[in-house]
Every structure is written in C-alpha cells, then in structure tokens.
Image (tube, rainbow, N blue to C red):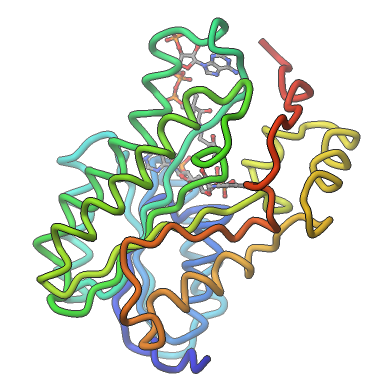
Amino acid sequence: MNNHQHQGKHVFVAGGSSGINLGIAKAFVLAGAHVAIASRSADRVAAAVSELMSVASEGVRVLGFSADVRDAEAIGKALADAHAVLGDIDVLVSGAAGNFVAPALGMSPNGFATVVDIDLKGTFNVMRQAHVYLRKPGASLISISASQSYTPTKYQAHVCAAKAGVDMLTRVLALEWGEQGIRINSIVPGPIGDTEGIRRLAPTPEAMQRMNDTVPLKRLGKLTDVSDMALFLCSAQASYVTGAVIPVDGGISLVGGRDLSAGLVGR
Ligand code: NAP
Ligand code: COA
C-alpha cells in the first residue's frame, strides 16, 4: 500500500500520548501527515509531541493538547484549536481508555462508571464534537476497541461493556454519517506488547507467557500491527469500508475462558 497518499492529511488522535494510539500518530507522521494529539496529562502530551517531532520530516506539523475525553467541552476546544491551525480533519482516532483488573463485586459503581465514561462516553464526545470539523466528504474515523468487546472476560465487566458499546456506536455513526461521506470503523486490538494495557492485564512474566500462549498466532502484537490497519482504513483502498469492526488480535477474540487472575494485584 502506498503510504504517501497520507502526506499532508490532518489527523487528530484522542488519547495519543502513549502506547497504541501514539503508535498510530507516529505512523501518520512518518507518512507525512500533520498530527494533533490530546490526552489528560500536559507532561505526557509534551513528551509525545517531542517524540513525534523527532521522526517528522520538514514541514510536518505536530500539535499537542491537554484534554479529558470525559469533558465534552474540553475535547471540543482541543478539536477547535487543532482545526484552527490545520484545517478540516481527514483522520480522527478515538483511543483514550482506562482499565484495571477487578471482579464485578470488587468494582464500586464509580469504578465501573469511570471506565465506561472514558471509553464509551469519551468516544461519543470525541466523534460528536469533531463532526463540525471533519472533511466532508472524505473523513475517516477510527474507534480503538478491544477483544473484550467480543469475548466475555472475567474481571473486565467495565471494559467488556464499554468496548461493546464503542463498537455499536461505531456502526450507528457509520449509518448516520455515511451520506456525508464520512467512514467510521473500529480496530479491535488483541494483546499488544510493551503497552500499559498489557502490563495491567498480565503483570507478571508468567501471566505474560500465558497470554502469549493463548493467542492462536502465539505472539503478542506489535504497535505497527495496529497502525498498519489504521493506515489502511484511512486509505483510498478502504474507501468502501465503513461500519466494520476489525480484529487485529492474532485470533485471541476466538478464544473463550481466558484467565486474568494474575492481574488481581494491588487492591
Ligand atoms: P495507554 O498507553 O495507557 O494509552 C491510553 C491513552 O489514553 C494515554 O495517552 C492516556 O494519556 C489517554 N487517556 C486515558 N484516559 C484519558 C482521558 N480520560 N481523556 C483523554 N485521554 C485519556 O494504553 P494502551 O495499552 O496503548 O491502549 C490504547 C488503546 O488500545 C485503548 O483504547 C485500549 O483500550 C486499546 N487496547 C489496548 C490493548 C493492549 O494490549 N494494550 C489491547 C486491546 C485494546 P493520559 O494519561 O495523559 O490521559
Ligand atoms: N480495582 C478496583 N477499583 C479501582 C481500581 C482497581 N484496580 N483502580 C481504580 N478503581 C476505582 C477507584 O477506586 C475509583 O472508584 P471509587 O471512587 O468508588 O473509589 C474509580 O475506579 C476511579 O478511580 P480514579 O483513580 O479516581 O480514576 P481516574 O479517572 O483518575 O483514572 C483509571 C482512571 C482508574 C482508569 C486509571 O487507571 C487511568 O487513568 N488509566 C489510564 C491508563 C490505562 O488504563 N491504560 C490502559 C488502557 S487499556
């Protein structure tokens, strides 16, 4: 696939200061796109902007904003400010998320609500607030889901519920906004190595080995496994793809009964 087609595009990545989302931001910067990222911590945003600038070609712009996706007004302002500098948004990624491992009975109502608020309501806020700034026709939107959306997983009641909601929201917005030439798809990553998400789900070497062994392809994913899918979904080659929920997971969403009990630490 020709990644030069992304040169000069305007990209906004919510939750883009680390891990999988930063990997996607980096892939677009390397392809010559102008990229804005947003997350809560101004320090983490600044560090990520520096990292992205270090791989950017001359003329590529990288912007960073501090905003919590749970605050519709704050994320709306970040989107407005990015739009004021870059112009209409071609690519929007909603990837902010929170997770911890706990049984449903070990989750307070606020613990459950916190993850639903970040993952599901956050994705609604990002996409709803971005709509006015999207290129129409032509914008490509991506929700970052998780295999917990497909597979009921013990100690992940909040994430399973939230990400299933994210995938349904993706499909509804694809229906509603299709006639404006906006495409919206979900990427469903499996366990991706060297990320905060996998560190929380498999906090010991034994748990990490078990996770590795559980994946049908017998390896953890790489950041580029996910960012390659993002580049594809935003490419001309995917111009007829919308409302799709696409696993990039080594097959783990096919596997039931996973054991995450090793993640029950520290509480
Ligand atoms: P990560 O490094 O912790 O990334 C989460 C990002 O979201 C950070 O940039 C964080 O920055 C930001 N964030 C968190 N809460 C936020 C909020 N309320 N408002 C705005 N930004 C917020 O985690 P990751 O493991 O790479 O996960 C990234 C995405 O991939 C998530 O959607 C996750 O569900 C999904 N995923 C990950 C895996 C995996 O194996 N890692 C597997 C399946 C799906 P701040 O702290 O500065 O806010
Ligand atoms: N077990 C049970 N409950 C937990 C918990 C755990 N391990 N960690 C947090 N909670 C509960 C808290 O007790 C609180 O509930 P309470 O008010 O009833 O006590 C609630 O969750 C919110 O916690 P708080 O720390 O105030 O939330 P926050 O908004 O500051 O942070 C989190 C959100 C908890 C999701 C935090 O882990 C985070 O910021 N995560 C982002 C990074 C991440 O998770 N990356 C992986 C993505 S896959």
